[in-house]
Length: 306
Length: 298
Image 1 (tube, each protein chain N blue to C red):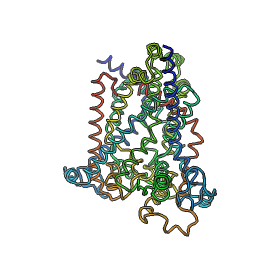
Image 2: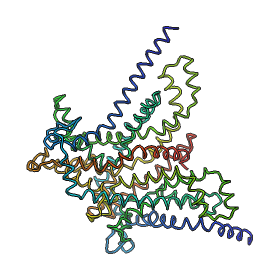
Image 3: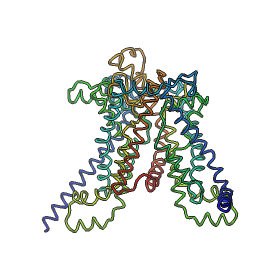
Image 4: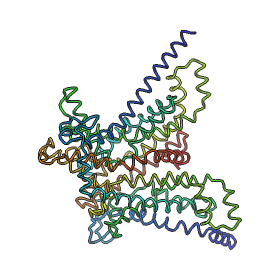
């Protein structure tokens, strides 16, 4: 016993500088990651600024009951899921298609130029992109409506103010920012496919399309699987910065998602406890999704996330 | 046989042409919104309001920029953004390194416990409100520490650096240890120089996200002298957006103003995005590298 203890102590002494390095790191995680978890308990209290987190009155599940009984909750939950499903269904395949197209480009300079242009939006703030989108889609001054009006003789469409069009604008803006950037991992996976497979297929007279179908797509299957699974793990996260800049009063029925609702009702109207309950609900569901999805990946024989 | 071969080559040539054209169109689509805003910023208010601006500046002028330069607020905000970005990135890199290096040493006792302690914070993320209350009760409101401290380490970036350090050959470090070098000296003189590519990529990840973020500033910074570029833009865009909705067409009430807010807004956007565009070739190269390194083990 004494031996093991002294071994542990000597190893601790030997690595004391490593622990010293970790000290501020552990402090950071304790204060800024774990302390807010304690703060989550105000979901079960009536939080008042004056009383603080610990002094406020316990109220049990009151806030959860009123949450699940409110129309707002089901509305923001539905919007969160719907926008996520749109982004998944329409947004997920786009980088794969782009990568397949890029992979066939033999002229190196052309490929590089296209990649440079496609990656660019990823580097630009959502504030800027939101501003640009609002300007382009504006019914009075935007270029899209000018074209619709003058070329096609259509009435102007209120993309940002019409509940039917807003989700379209939202989804497109997301694709526009991330689709090009999303090709990187697929292109890397394609580059690692054995070129001999293509040679053999060519000798057999397989067309480009058949080569894509039988060699390239199977070659990136595991990349697709892992990215898809990761994406599904975040079905309750909607890009807060994206939604906040694109939404406005007249489309809140479709544009209000959990995070923007928490911001508006919680921080602007100071309904701290009520919206903390909503945030806690979101965190718990996300936790379940991530853990579940990780199980799923491993069940399919892919490498899990941990 | 010859005929079939010809058919194939014609078909593949058509396919290639279609492919190149499609990709060209997609690239233009990616570029056009930026181009449009640049063109708008140099156009007259009349032309923008009439919807005449599409490909080139109409009635070229630099009024919007002169107005913004005169006003000067945007440049104060840009200065603030630079401070937030530079200090924030430095803090990020120091803390990320201090976490990644010890955790990459397999001999470290309690390593797996520490890793679990950190991974759990990735799985269970806390809501906005508890974080807000924390920052407020620490008295950080209206100070940039409210932005820096809660974001000292991006756990994802830290793991990328850790796995990069794990991939370094151990012999180098062992021989240094035999020569009597301590952990700090090994880190600074041996490990860090080998980590240059990942350090470059990660500091750019951090820097770009500081430059672009606005939500945390919206939450924690209320003093107008401390506001950053993105927050100024957010307010401009929101204000224009709301006024557009309130008076329908958006053209009322601005008749007597020489420029529509649209032109000024476009110019502000161009100013905000210029540093990113100037740095872009450099940023892009390192970002792609960082993503690829991160995906190997991430």
